[in-house]
Length: 157
Image (tube, rainbow, N blue to C red; front, side):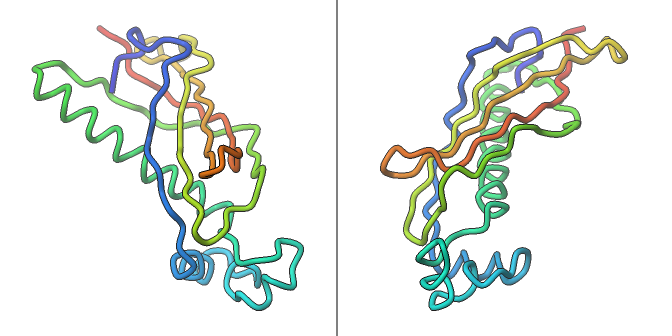
């Protein structure tokens, strides 16, 4: 992770893409969001969605997996160059969560994170807070997911 001091508003991270399969949608929903339009194709066809679609929580879980994998690769590359890695602290939460469009079986969602705000922590001077706008876009260029997450990032000594 870059240090807070090296992060700029407008920095973008292309986290990657994921294709949602019907089997995966059903498996996730069976465990975590067992609404009929997530677990049963026939019921989904008769719903307001018109077809089997992923739980919104599933779309965020995939974002989280891609975000962590991105950070692991980035940290490894930085370490290989002999550069230090900052510590990413806890997240105090997120805001403005919107599931803009359904994610259907077969959809490929591309996830991007962009720093939209940063400030020093008043209570913890060795940390800064970054606010990151996270989005998911389907293969047609349509936004399907958006939220702003906040996280503590270590400052340089």
